[in-house]
Length: 457
Image 1: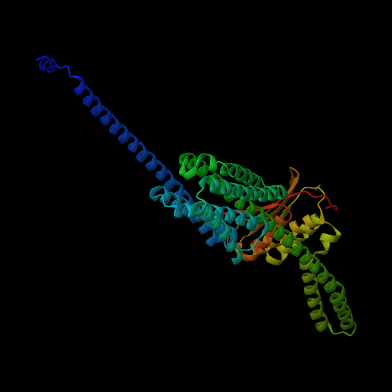
Image 2 (image 1 turned 180 degrees about the horizontal axis):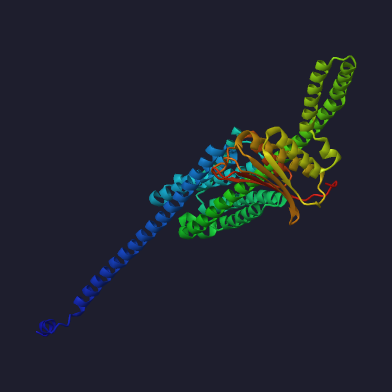
């Protein structure tokens, strides 16, 4: 009755106490196991999601560089694209290993790690030294995969495999940093120096593989660091390439400007030579013929020879005005305007100050040729009744305007050969040329040149 009374009072006996505690412990163990399994599943899901994000980032970078290679045709773009594509494949291999625990995927992951490092080094050498791709470079992938197979499948020592792979990977990455550092120091490129610093940090980061990530441990840290470094490398690479192309374009523009300047100078020299020959040789010969015809009383023939002689002199003056060489810029422009008015019957006026700064001969030629071409355009296209050529010096420069009251033009005029020639001459002299006009209200050409001292004007 005591036992029954005890059971009725709710106090279990010793035997029942033992069963009860065993049952409670079993329930607690099961609950702990479930919580552990849940944490493992949650951690695996987070790690795989992080790896998927990293693979997506690398795949996007691979597509970007592939597009740049298709557009620009540069080999280093293709190498960078292949490197980021292989990096995404490498991440896929470690992800499959985490799901299946099959060591063959780990072998592929380790082998691809070395191949990616070599591919990035190849891209750096292609960019900095112009190294060309050769098929024998594919043989370098054999040692990477062979060591991964030996260390994982035969030795079964992941720490040894990771340590050796990390050391080799860091060495190749440091080599890449050295390539970019030397390139940046030689070219004065900050982008290349920054890229070298990023590869240096990445090489140090590779050394944490055997410490923090044996068999997939520390994946979240690795993904975070890799995404930051890969993003930094890609962005700095694009800035580096754009900077180099901008520098190459500037150098090309300088070469073109120098070539245009030399061509214009050669053109002026040739014009001067032809004008001198016309004046000295053909002009003197025609003058002698005219004198002989006058002495023989052949007035009609002498008159025709005189007309030809006048045309030869006009042609010589158009090629190279003697007044520009003998008298200076202001008399040459004044004679040009007066001759234009007499030939075209368009009222032309020349406005210039009494005193004018000295200009170098090349500046004088530029101003004269631009005024000559602008007046030619007025006669051919404007239908104007009046035109004004103004010349002034202010603010350390020379300003010339050619303005007419013709039909004008809406917006930017069509770039014909004459206008292009004027722009080229002014740009070669370091100046600027602006045009403006409105329909029915005339057209205006403004030239501004820096003053370069020379002969008196």
